[in-house]
Length: 112
Ligand SMILES: [Zn+2]
Picture 1 (cartoon, rainbow, N blue to C red):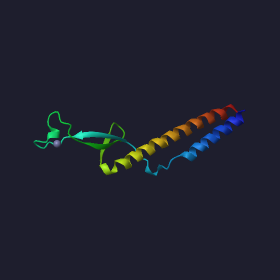
Picture 2 (picture 1 turned 90 degrees about the vertical axis):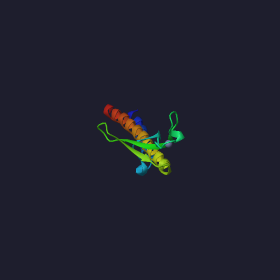
Picture 3 (picture 1 turned 60 degrees about the vertical axis):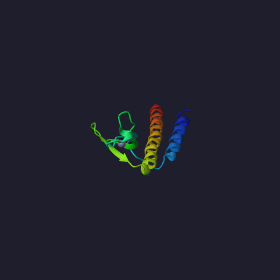
């Protein structure tokens, strides 16, 4: 039954929409770590073969047209940044599912 299918898809779509996480903390970019060299004479960590200091954390944000902005993230903000990035990904995941269900709905409605 087409009506039943439309009903099921609508239900599914509405359930997904209700699950949509709060977007207020969503953050774009990706978090990367990197070791750095202080260049101080005699620093053992920065000697040849040394690991350097760190890691330091960088939020890499694409600004379009090949431009990437790299924002250093202090250690005490790392958790907040990670939560924001995770939230963005979670929202994208739910949104993608809603988009897919709505596409199925569209196809069902076309058949009617
Ligand atoms: Zn050093």
